[in-house]
Amino acid sequence: MLLDTIEQANDIKKIKKEELGELAQEIRDFLIQGISVTGGHLGSNLGVVELTMALHLVLNLPEDKIIWDVGHQSYTHKILTGRKDGFESLRQFRGLSGFPKRKESDCDAFETGHSSTSVSAGLGLVKARDINGGKNTIVSVIGDGSLTGGMAYEALNNASKLETNFIIVLNDNNMSISENVGGVSQYLNYIRTATGYLDLKKGIYNALHGTKRGKGTINTLRRAKSSFKQLVIPGMFFEDMGVTYLGPVDGHDIGSMTAVFNAAKRVKGPVLVHVLTQKGRGFAPAERHPARFHGTEPFDIETGIPSHPRTVANYTDIFSTVMCKLGQRDDKIVAVTAAMPDGTGLKRFHNMYPNRFFDVGIAEEHAVTFAAGLAVGGMKPIVAVYSSFLQRAYDQILHDVCLQNLPVVFAVDRAGLVGSDGETHQGIFDLTYLTGIPNMHVCAPKNKWELSDMLKFAVGLGRPVAVRYPRGTAYAGLQEYREPIALGKAEWIYREGEIALFALGSMVKTALDVRQALLEQGRRVSLVNARFAKPIDEEAVLEACAEHKLLVTMEENVFCGGFGEKVLDLVNRKGMHCRVMNICIPDAYVEHGNVELLKKKVGIDGESIVEKIQEWCLGEAGAE
Image (cartoon, rainbow, N blue to C red; front, side, top):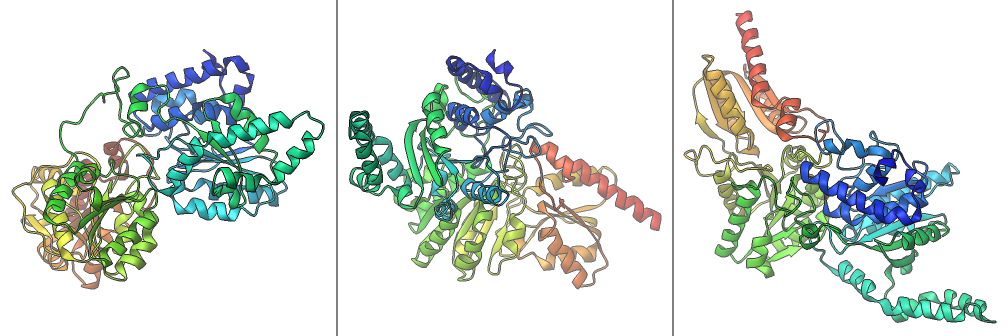
């Protein structure tokens, strides 16, 4: 196999030109086979096989740098830099990351995980190169979906004044995670179909080349290219910004791309190469359903059907059902998402109420301020977003929603540990960054029934509210405990003595297991469903301190700024003589891996918690 000859960076240059197509097919087969077992980002990686190969053919890594926007499409890049043998551990604990990681390879120039960052990072590397007198090539690869994020335009605006080479590759597959929306998508679609301009330009140049006065005429035409393009393709946006535009070029034609990339390297300034690719190329199920195969679980290669299909509802499914019911009961309910209608569960709402559904593209900041405007206009907006992505809109939450105390509800999906996507996607900071904002209220359901109740409560509160819930199967236990939701009030589930477990959201299920293990040891254990991280139920905390020797807070968030820290602060301020034990995630980034394994690693699994409480009990007995 040709693929077996790729052992390190630049080995692809040893492959004969006529064999490159065969290598591309081997890479596709390898990706399909591997991801069918491990899961991962399939569609995006199948779409950039030839694009990645072309970049590796014209660049010299690691001296030259490639920055992958988001980074989920870097699998071929990893293969071509000698990491093929690590793919059996893809996205597994201590295994190969699904995103660029500098600690993995010198060829991973910049760590990414969120959208619209590559141009900014690339520009920084360009300026550093110029200051240091370097001559290497810097390439930022950005998808058309990522161009819906404002940060990309901030970087393009800044890059337009460059007088040294900087290559931006626009990987245009007409998709982000779901189908692209908005004016940028329409504009790029216009360029894709504007073959008349490209054919006309090529025809004129070919006709004039070699004639007596042809060279001078061609130079005159080149000087007038801006007016020419404006005539045939109105609003040549990138060139108007000062960025040389090359393309569009077939993203599956290695020869064409290498020629264009070599030409781009000679440009003294920023140059954008527009490459047209097909998401999911080479695997029929992914071509038909690119959104489904953006990030996929293990699947059957023949059919594309998941190997272990879900048989029970997850929290996103519950949210989806509740949203449709809320929309039916109240025509003021509107839904906002940032390019995630499928991932957040809003597709059904979109189908039922298309005029009250808004997908703003990969633009979380805009999504939040847009929702604030909807609220001022009398609507009841619900912003559905992943915890990790909501971080990007912190200023908008603080200034545009909470400062005005507007009734915007944030449905914060994937809160807590999410697993295989690793550091950039773990939702372990939202309690910290949300509870520090005045006027914000933050709650977390213990089970699927409480998620429904909390969403209805949040809509009726008429103030900013975040409802955070985890990824995965919706817990159906404790259905008999369903006290009405009241602002800032916890729910006592078991009230006994000695040890009080104060668990928030997903940790209630774990707390039940911890309680059972302690009961078997003869301990008396109370269990409180905290419900709110802000405002916390101070009355319940102080009651627990008065009636118990040990109060254990449990949350899927880092300690700093989290629920446990607030409880500890209250106990200390009130001078309560009760020991507080905080069960939480250490103040650190958590790598990729199976969620249950990660919980054990950070010490928030049931067994680890029981061990910590046992140690306290032994110490308490010794002190007596």
